[in-house]
Length: 302
Image 1 (cartoon, rainbow, N blue to C red):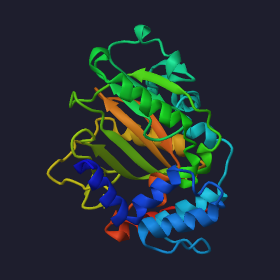
Image 2: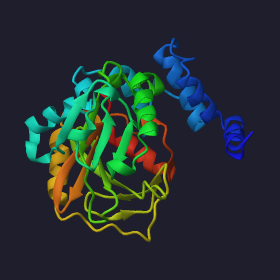
Image 3: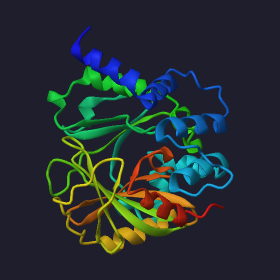
């Protein structure tokens, strides 16, 4: 057995959350009722007992929303293709990253018609992404394997996030873009509660060491973290169009108990990334824990 396989086996044995996710991917819990599954996963991942009768923390309230807040429009909001029309209707086409094509399977893609750089995404899940910086230097065998695996997955069963249950699995290609770093696109994730922005999470270093810094809506740095480590040594400049970003997030989250609006800033122009209704599937660790409780106070359940 190789060293890598031994390490994977060791993690599988030591960490219950990894075992649970692996068994979930195999479909062992597909027949479980949603409430039973969520209570079990919450306990395994967070070590806490899920209180659905009187949820208090942000993570508990996210579980409640999964079960009881099932607006049909949410299916459109999490579909990476369909949401573009929704967003364009509300804030304008200028915020949309150009779509280069949409297909039902990998074999339909005509790579000759695509530029040398682009991004492939599955429309119905999280993680089904291939970033092509050079068509002649991309491992298309692994790319196909990742996309095919994603297309076969119903992402709903991973965390019982209801909006994903009936999204049509497709592949889209988008224009490749980077910010001032020339290597990545920092994610400006704006946490909104009933249409009001309250917190901004900036993800960076995804291709090196993934980190997240947190800021207030006035761009004051917060000594706190959500799952991934923060880095006070990396002080991200306040976006020139921060006010426009906040107003964009406000418009897109209006009427929704909680929505995380993901935006990009490229040469001081704002682009829409995606809408997330259940951040981290409601199981990510808040440090300090008080932040999770504060965000729970902001999240008023319908």
